[in-house]
Image (cartoon, rainbow, N blue to C red; front, side, top):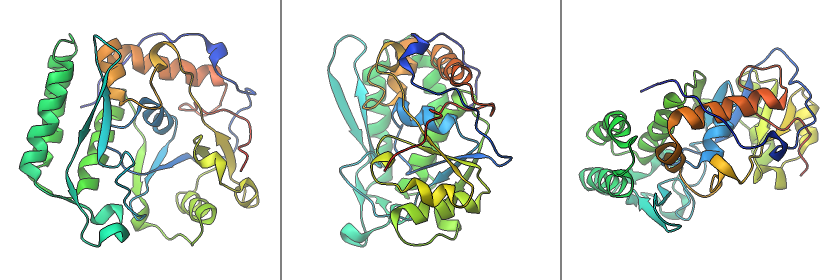
Length: 274
């Protein structure tokens, strides 16, 4: 499921970074909910980290990307959603880890069918379809939506050559409060830096991290070239349009340009603001 990637990126000027290295001996940590075939911006953030803490013990949100993905078209600007019909045993209070597929066999057929319909014209499709088979087989083994979506993310990361570590937040001790939970999760994996996406930067309290010796790095991606649609479309679209080699090298070249000392670093080196 893991193949090497290579390619080029647009202009490094599209990134805004102070070119400061990530310091500290601990790993770089990204914390994100399991998403179905996540957006390219999400995949890039996770790729930049040594550790992905899968945030599976927070409330499931139907209007988010936890059980669905937006796919682009290879021939037009149109987009299309693919979803895994999901049952919430505890209603709106259901945690991500407790959500269940309403009909695993039907969900498998829908996912495979929509992906095939959207991307079969791509020369990359035969290789991707072969890799996809391991994910589709998982529908026969579990009805837990989060297990499927986590596996879908790892499929994409593995295709791009990521070799990091995955830990589920439900296995770690963390306090209450949005920022404190993130701080505690980072401390639980011994992180020296936390990669903060554009959404998190709007509410986190950076001082809570720095007070315990954890750096905060705001993570963003450009919006042109390979990155067009990166914040809304599944990474599958970029990979099937440009090829995993191009997407993979784009991510790695961007990491080197950012100037971080960490081998997977791809974060803006400026401090995030709440």
